[in-house]
Length: 121
Image (cartoon, rainbow, N blue to C red):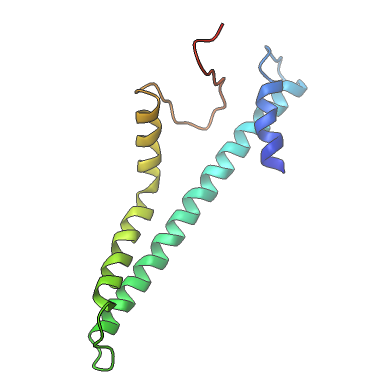
């Protein structure tokens, strides 16, 4: 709910907002919402990377135990390690996707800005 207000806040702050006005405060709230959601996404990706790494190593260790000689343990361990790398580098992939999707015109930062679709008018 608060992220909705943070996203809407920038629309209200599009006009030249003097300092300490409601528009400036909404713009600040929007910036903080963008920063918070970025930090939450990064934390979730690192937690997922740690989980995939530990499960991958555990599966590889289990594959060497005599009671677990059935198929699949080695590949499950390798898959866990690969997913660990993908989650750990998620921020880089998001930035590359933004630059690719915008034709090289993306600026990835925590400052809200005007988004214009189409030729404008």
